Every structure is written in C-alpha cells, then in structure tokens.
Image 1 (cartoon, rainbow, N blue to C red):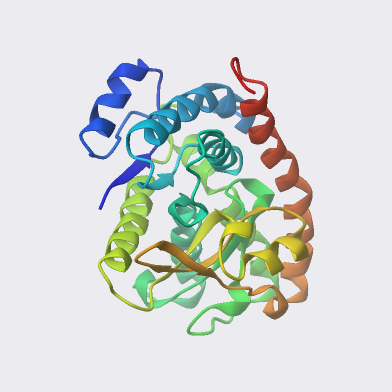
Image 2 (cartoon, one colour; image 1 turned 120 degrees about the vertical axis):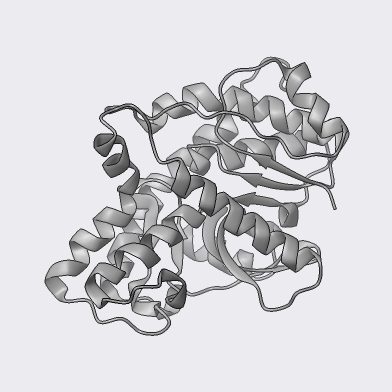
Length: 283
C-alpha cells in the first residue's frame, strides 16, 4: 500500500519533496508555527503552493497513493489537491482525505469536563462541515453514548471546539500552535485508513472529502450546496467506501451551525479551485 501524508509545511525544494514519493514513503515536513493574529488567509498563502507542488509529485510518481491532507486551511488545500490530480488525469476521490480528526478529538475531550467521563475514547462525537472556525459543526446531539449538556454550556463548548487552535496559540504566547494534538489526530486517522485497507470492517471516521466521487455523497452535496464536506466516512480497502448522511438527524441548534458553515465553506473551496486554475501553466 502506498500513501502520502501531507502535513502543514515550510517551503522546501520540490526535488527534496519528490524523493520520498519516488521511494513510496510518507511525506513528512515541518509546519509553520501559528502566531496570534494569523488568519487562514495567511496559512493559505504559505501552504497553497507547497500542497500544489507535493500533490504534483504524487500525481507523477504514486497516483494510486492514499492522500491524507492535514495542511491548513484544509477547506482550501483539499480542493487544491483534487484539482491537481484532475489535471493529471489520475484523480480518485476515494483516495483523497482532508484530516479533520483534530476537531473530533477536541469535541470528545472537551465534553468530558461536563460529563465527568475520564476517558475520551469512550465517547464518539461526529463532527461535520469543514476544518476552521464556524465551518466546524460538532454534533453533540449524536454522541454515543448520549451526553447531557446544559443549555448554558452548549454554546461555549461548541465555540471551544471551533476555535480550539486559537486557545493553544494564546496559551503558548505566540511561540507555537497545536502540535502534539495535531500529531495524534494525524496518527489516529492514518491508523484507521491502514486498518481498513488491510480488511478490517466497520471503521468510520469523519473526513473532508470530495462528495460526488463517493457512494452516498451526491445527496449530501445537493443538500449542502458544496462538493467538499466532512461527514462520517466508512473506510475500506479502496479508501472512502461510502459517505454517511447524518444531516436529517441533527438538532435545531446544529442546523443553525450548519447554515453558517455552508456560507463560509463555499468561498474557501472556490479559493482552492481558483488557485490551481490561475497557477502558471494552468490549462
């Protein structure tokens, strides 16, 4: 099995990036340190070209790789990856994932301060939408087992999940961003993909994917009005086997969060698509 993991990165030469791809190994590079006041636009300006170059290398050397994109802003960098693979004629939507697991980890961890459960792994909370700010929609109403969250605590809890990265940057005084939790999230999702590829059944993880190319995705794309969206994905030997439509089961509060998510998400997707279309040499 070949796989390419694309984390946030600092600028390096494309030749250095391509060497591990040619050997069929993972891509592992450094990420820019988050700083107070840094916006998703700042991250886009840093990472968009890097992701484009990396995925160009994937398309040329290992087009059947499972590509796990964790480079922020994921809402834009996954569309960049898809457009590059499309241009190369090797795009397989089932093998491209935006890693949004950190949002799930935060939701499952932060809720324990209310429920008193000491082990976050015993609670499963799906998170849908995108991977920044108000595009992150944690579905506490669908927690398994069910959790009882007082009304006055729900709003602050949702905001903490949505903007947990800012909390870390501020706590570090601008000297860094979420690193250990990001590494764990990347590991957790990668482990799930590997297990599924090796034949383990019943593995479901939320991921930001290209919906029209995945079973069950068209209905979600039609309902949300966007082609890229994070929903629970059933993983299997070919990658994303199916997308689970949970939208009909969400609460009234979550429906309001979803509307805000959709407004913001479309612009981020368009920005990624346009970046590739306007790049030098684009056809």
